[in-house]
View (tube, rainbow, N blue to C red):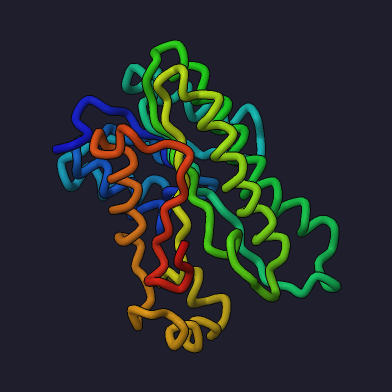
Length: 246
């Protein structure tokens, strides 16, 4: 198992991509702090990890709140002795044309997707720097890299996550802390399918001819979290079936 002895904090881990990441890292031996705003789904993820023989604790946390972001790192230290891996997965993805987006929705999208990544990274970076070791992985999106319609706030926030990743990677490299991003494309989660039927048309534009699944993203995160990626930092890994090719 690749992550034995590591402690991972994962935000938005109560369902979908976040839950898949939590389960995958746990199977590789990581002890996991499951963060989510939904207490019920966070507990369910912990139960699944424990059923598989892993160790995990849950914490209700709103990543837009500095105290909650700091509490996630503190929970990792108190429960498992430290924090080695942070996965900033929590996200919010509404749809609206630019002329229809109200200020409150714009602010919320920026807060969850970008500010939350900043706050959680800042909290985890301090003990990582002191320990001179660590990995931060930010879940961005292909929407932050390509033309898009109907989600300007989300696309702008995810573009910000990509840029933030590069800067943070530069600042933390002297402390042996790596920072990378993963950009999922169309991933078949219940939340995505419930939003609209746009995914049906999207399949026709994906070169591999299918939607991704949460485990596709989880495998990319596992790679970046592992020693196999020890010489990779400041990079953005696309997981999108070829819809964006850099």
